[in-house]
Image (cartoon, rainbow, N blue to C red; front, top):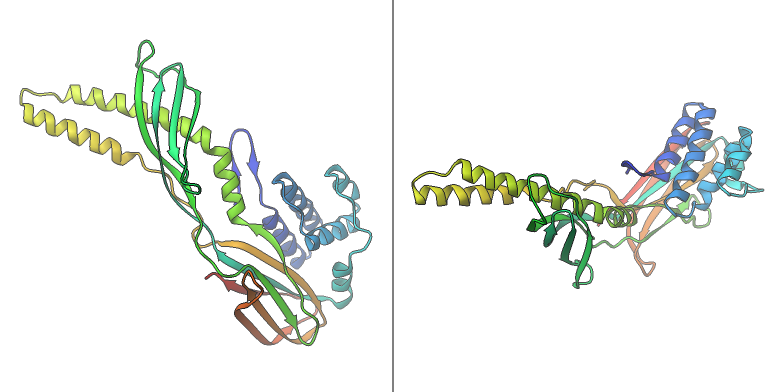
Length: 314
């Protein structure tokens, strides 16, 4: 969820928003205000809209902390009214509903091949898993250590490729006691984040991987020469074994949060202390109910924040 390299950091607005709520639970208002500010900043830096309810609590808490100028720096206009935040202050307790819509994408292997000319260029081609079209791109290549002149190498390697899993849930509806329907907002889209991160990093990762493959190829050739004997069959077996080992080493890094939701929805509902009944429905793309989560007699004390989850993963 958090990515940082030499040039940039991809932060996650929802994580800061959740952190702000935790700080509130512990009565740490100053830390909560800082986390709310960072939540809004992270959403904007990732070119995402700040969800309405998130913006409302950000606005209310920064005004309370006397930090209105923080949002001005982000070019965000403070809200004049914060009805949910004000309602929470009046009632003194809340139920926080979080819905999981689908399972996060997984990573498969995308095979890339082409030619690297030491100190000149790197030309690669691959088949786009989304469109099925063959694509190519060219970039500058550094001088490869251990080579002379414009040495040319054929390279082939695997890179991570996103694969979206099928899912039914696209939205949620919430019914508290006999009140009107409440619609949670989307606060996080892992599919979108993975798509952006892979797109931003593709060229850089491809260049680094191609160079690593070339260096490994040179090392393998040197190893073959060092192990050469007077027995042709043994030399053949050694050569093949070295090539196979080299190929097996070049696998894509497919580590990812396999157990994360594809999209995450959330709403904060101010309530009076006491018992409450709550029904959460996961909805498909046409608004039909996929699954329901019925919570009866939820006891909420004054000052308490109660979390309820609807894991509509399928």
